[in-house]
Image 1 (cartoon, rainbow, N blue to C red):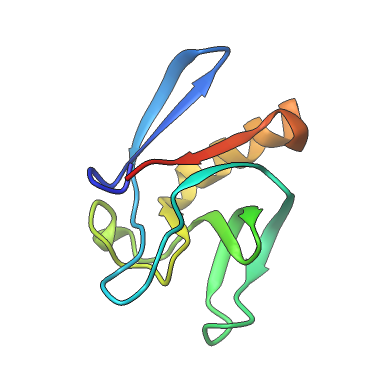
Image 2 (tube, rainbow, N blue to C red):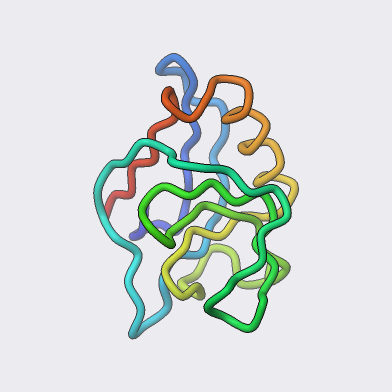
Length: 112
């Protein structure tokens, strides 16, 4: 949810987690919609933003991903270039869940 800067994680329609996130800062965009997860990269680094670390990346729409951040003090407020940032510990949990259930059964929905 962009408006609340929070992520809800569901499995079999049951809410398991609610975590603070950072989405796009002013002048940038986090796309709204729903996508099937496309690919995973555990130790990803940004090719667009100075090799910035993007641990536990779950890519869902082109260059957009859910991933961990080292800027944990900015979680809960818009701060990213468009990706959805999580605390690295939470990103690791989510990454493991996606590995377990598979990309084809993982839906990323971004709400306004």
